[in-house]
Image (cartoon, rainbow, N blue to C red):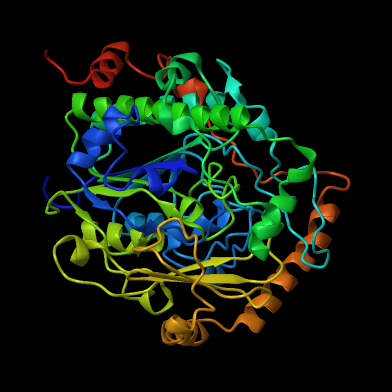
Length: 502
């Protein structure tokens, strides 16, 4: 590969990095991801910028934390003037396209992308706005509940399968089209699947792969009364009292989740097979937006800085990067500067307002000690929550809650909060000072509340009378597909065939 490399981004939803300490765990049926890991730089301690879809994805695309993007939750608008990796690459001559989910909220459904091949799976409007003015109130019609756990099982088609089958199909078709060489530009194709996100429902052939697996057994749960305040709020938000969760429910939910990892693996295998068959080369990046608790500590889904929810897989296979494992903590906000570095694209103009930094120096042997920052200000919270991971330590701070400090090397399950341990007072003070220097939390809180209040006015107003949805509508020009009378049949058949002459 010479010049600007093609770039293929493979993104999944809610895949916990705790299952990817060095590529997929050996017991997972994920041969394609395992093969990709073998030729990738593998970041064993990669973290989301925010453990929720829309904030995490806006941060991944921009290299900015949620407070800077103002995408605080799943219904906050992603402003059009924030540069994404798609803008940077497109300005440098790339063709940029997306097949699948990115959870853009607002009228801009492209954010630098030249083309979206599918619609999104989630709404683009302000309907999922939390309301900190009403702490403890569940918004029943869109909040998570534990029905995803009690309803786990087998189905051959679901809303999510219908979506991801389409996403993979369009990605494959796009790769075939790119191979024909009609567009001389380098390309960046992002393929974003919604699995293994709950509900934990899987096709029988993936479900059967995990028959009798010891990894289905329920993790140790923590009683509600012994949970930290934020975890209690998350359990309340998930309406835990309305569900009698049995060990069998947990086993089935975990089985459905693992099964859908295998489904994702198969789809990624199909995409990579087409890339190889068409003899195209590309730098390949694989990641998730955030993780999944999967019953650890008695918690499900995401929305916290616990390892299951906040850690994500991150692997990069690119020219000049020697495959290896890196344990240094990194963030998904580092992806945009990394992509630009791989493509030889300068971000100098906006680096003062960019939180991430390129992973290329770290991947090529330069040490790094930058703390990994995370932010959360969405459902289940009552004030902004922030976290810092540096070295062996993880620190969580929220004005509404007691601090948390964990030694992840000695305590990977985060069982012992050291924040009140006098032996670790110096470490706590050091992290507290770093957090105070980085965040003005009263101002952050005011910004979130203002945004929520505005949206609680705008959304119901826009749903009255004529409604003009922002959801992306993919354009399909039937008059220009396959064989039509504006083209020569002989030319068409020759141009659509690749490789030719074999």
